[in-house]
Image 1 (cartoon, helix red, strand yellow):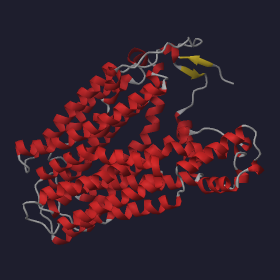
Image 2 (cartoon, rainbow, N blue to C red):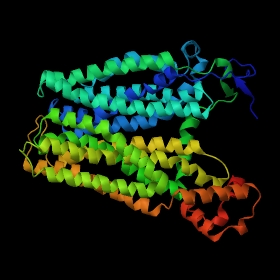
Image 3 (tube, helix red, strand yellow):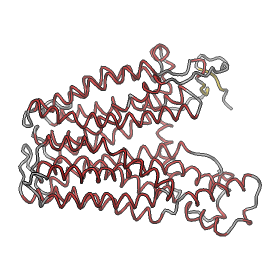
Length: 509
């Protein structure tokens, strides 16, 4: 058995608890200018910029994003390993094992993000700079994810930190969505300077936000960093990822959850990514109109989020997913109806109304897997007799990032299949029809697959409570043969295991 030591090699001292202040909450939350706002800009405008202003084909642009995002998914555990062990270096001891990478991210994002919006470069340049951006993004985000555990052990303080981050994400996304419209108004829609200045302005904002993160967050002192004398290698970390994926997918409820997660992730990014193409090339509205409408939807999407939370608590996540799929379908029907109103003065106002409905549905679809994820560890506990939250969180992150890569490729492949002409917003009727299909029908196909998974996932608060009570009964020495038949059926439905095989697997490990 390995001895637990602190980072200085001595026995750990008694920890001192530090209170979280409002400035600490603001400091931690500010990272979502990178995590939230930049994602909106990239999803809505970067592929459009590459295909209409930079001469890249739809397939070439989609490959850039697909490879970069899958690389990001694989880099996450690597970066986690590096930050966990960086305290062993002189730089880590001087600046902090997590906060050193936040500090490094300030000049990096200030250079890399605007570089993504430079016009007139070749495919190799855009591929390299996007890959570099994903590396900077991962370096900062992974470092920041661990900060709440570094800053406090109090559950209520962690909730304040993560809650503040959610609020900041909405604010950052709203600000980011409005910036392109302002730049189009200043420089004109056909001037590539508008896109470059979008990158410059938001790059400065992200750099400033990371300065705030650096100033008002902190880590555990070196004396409180506990580590085993036998530190895992990077190879073992990568091997554990494969093991964790296999272990998580053995659970039936989690397999269905992953279908809902993947379909929701693909839809939410596809909806944002195709929106600009649809507004400009199908509805024949200005890029500035697309930017303003997108900004309004980001600002009002909190209403969909609050409705989703309410329904999840009352009905459970699977039924709520079905309800929000219907909301999205109404929005998609509205988008289709708008194609018959081209040239009418009221079209842009109707677009705003329809987009608010559709993106409110998108906000709910986005939140449902977040709400549902903690229940997976409770269901898994009745199988293995132990808590394994980390496995499900890790696999969730891996799948969600991979899904965003699939979305980028789907848009590029769809545009190419319908003959999208690079370098112009004027497209053939066949291409317009294809963009309309991607904006209206394809989202419903992905969400329809999620709907089928949600129908099969019998997870609500009543069933969850019965599973938790059964775990408690077994912990207290209750006999498995005394199980209530209804509880037995619920356990088998959620776990995918025969009840007789549950609760004994941890003894066989």
